[in-house]
Image 1 (spheres, rainbow, N blue to C red):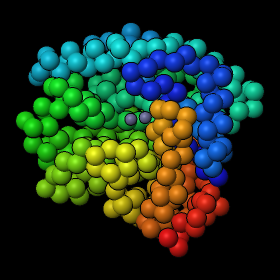
Image 2: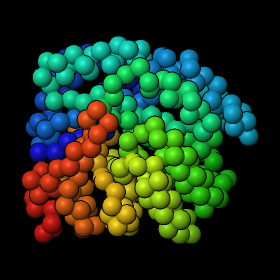
Image 3: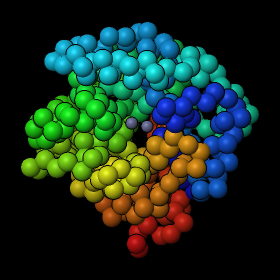
Length: 299
Ligand SMILES: [Zn+2]
Ligand SMILES: [Zn+2]
């Protein structure tokens, strides 16, 4: 049985109420998929307080007002819940004995570390994921309209270099426990001249910031069709002595724990024998062999 350290309760474009009943559906699906525990890690931009506190971050990079407008609209459209209500429901679920952890997927917004710290401070998080989805006001993982046009206009090498800089800032802020989907720029299949500089940046950032590196199976569903991050990153992380977590990045119950045996096999190929989960911001290590349904070491 595994721990899934990255799960969302609301699909993009939908806002089903976050209730104990909904959490129960995830827990049932998790258990059917061989998952013993799930960290609920709703997006920062789901929370009304984050929208109010961070409002305008999309204007900081004024290079393209069209991108700023899209980022603003995206945040506005995704607001669905007060963070205090989210925390209360997840804590109720924990009290009811459901195997869930209180988490959040925090977007790194360059220059807004103090506000992010203020936002996180009042709550007893089990796990804070740190994610870079935006370079300036450009959302790199959404392939529509002006966001897609940027991939045509920009240098792919520069995109990867900028992403590495943002990951280093994120890790140095010490606000997050885990670097989520750290080689996300590969999502649509774009290839820089060399992946090595970003791979080095990921591992150096995680080592300097004391972060774990997330293995995320949602990459299998993206055009790139491979897990985040690529095997060379996992090998470098292993050599650097970093912990890894397992993540489905599910936005629906049925995807919880998807392809975790494949993640375990990747981890084993890189030399790992254990993976981590977080509770009260502290890591616990679990045996890969004990978790997997098929022996990850011999695959
Ligand atoms: Zn993400
Ligand atoms: Zn996510």
